[in-house]
Image (cartoon, rainbow over all chains, first blue to last red; front, side, top):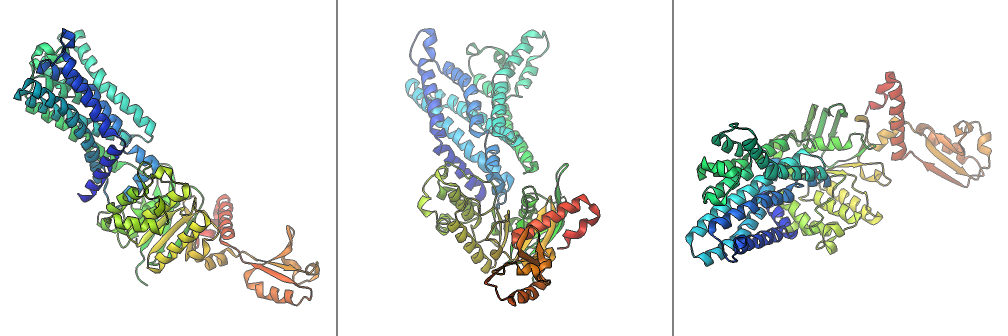
Length: 272
Length: 314
């Protein structure tokens, strides 16, 4: 355990030193406060929009940003150290591969988690004072917890990438492709399936398909509680057949644990 | 004799098509310094990785401190092993002290030991600077400090003197001698470098994954049977007229006698009997020549496989 914490501590400090934490926090804070205040601008008014509109727009924003940031933060975790030779060196230390991987995960995961908490938490606090509604805090805690899980899931996915390739530039390429597939292409494909193939897919089937994408699970978690008037597209259909929050959180959690376990397996088989 | 610290028994490693290391048998005793020589791709690094337990042998047996280094039991032995990889660039954005503190902590030591080690390798003045500002030599010293963490029982150093200036090289060898007198064993992996001879007890020569020769320098010299070069001065061609001596002259070095080791004294006596002799230079074969000898032997035997066993009797 001490070894894991040593690695985690180093990775966390790397995140601080590279200004990752501060810049992600700022991006999240600025965008979320901006959305909170100006989210209603489209309907002609400046000021705090309704809670559900705010959460809906924040979720649509986070679903693109968080995976991208998580992938950027960790795509070179292993391939980078492999290229510089420190990976081989670390493995001659009394440090197992799973300890190293978990240490990195805790360190980098903390960066993502803390940035999410601070960045989106700031607008939650702001909104709470504006609306004076306890509902704000519950909605936002669901939002923030699921956003953190989304970030952790993509951190684990980027470890998969980082361990499977042998060059940093390849890892960067795969990270971008992964982001594109999960954040954009998957939804388009679902929509195409829904529209293009008549009676091709039932509501339940659609929801099950969505479980294959952590970004969609994240959307479901945050949008299923809202008025469906704020939600459109494939999601609106899925929401009607909605799973319970607990099920959704479990699925999202599985999207953290599974890639992480596979990453450990790959790491153990990796030749150095 | 006590049990050897490291022992390889017919150990070998193959990757898909490549035999990185054919079967090698060697033992390293406590307090012994072994020089491991070979070209790039000779299998030096593979052998080090086997001893470190980073990879498992495809055949044969590897034992370090009485255990297989890739097994779970050997886990706690790892903090007693120091390793300097050939190509390593430490975390550029960290300071030297931060890098060394990180590695020290992973071996169960703390910042204080890290500072002491940085002092030992002489980069205390730069320890608060980021590694990216370090010169090649300073990085190498940082790497060495890393290998020295926790006074290891076994040190594996891959090209330790690359990038070091002469003074740092001398300091480095001093540290090796000191570790040796404290009972640590060292494997020095290197291209043959001048100055390494007096710091190693035994040498091992590898080529294309095969052990060509192993032994003390004296043994290797004997095996190689390389002649001693004797260069007399002031004789003005009388050597060529001396029937006892002119047999040792060769066409490409007309002023130097190449004499087999066992006839050295005879030849010297004969030379001293010449009146005009001003000076004499006697050079026994150095490590580099021994190394070249074994390599060329290997290359010629590779062409005629029937004589292949010649060089391996080590």
